[in-house]
Length: 122
Image 1 (cartoon, rainbow, N blue to C red):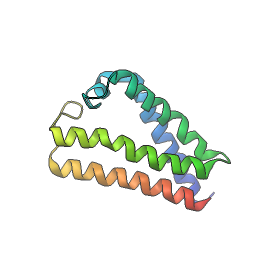
Image 2 (tube, rainbow, N blue to C red):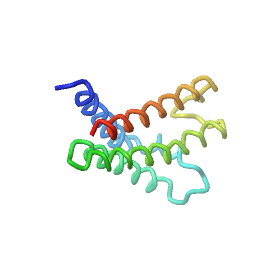
Image 3 (spheres, rainbow, N blue to C red):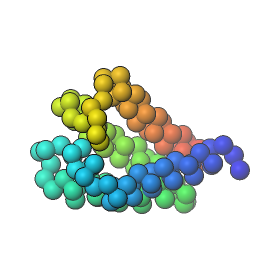
Image 4 (cartoon, rainbow, N blue to C red):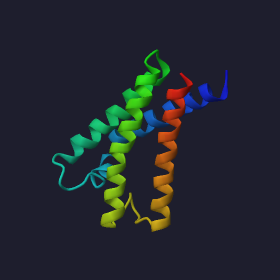
């Protein structure tokens, strides 16, 4: 098994775990949803469902389509992190420094880049 395939399994596992976490720790995610979006709990739970289902498709014959959808999804959900950064809100139980927010942005770009690698790999 090659490195891209093994990394894809880890990537899928990471996102499924993150998606499940939306249901195990809902209060954490409630504050990440921008105030102008109605029904924050339902919005982040929908995000959790997408984080569970969409990565699974990276393991199917629809890998390319799923990878492109992951890129779009990851760009869209970064808006919540950007909202937390701009508003100076706590992320969990602490407020991130600008350096930590920049690291979080770089991490999001890495997730997007890996989805693109999966897309190109197919």
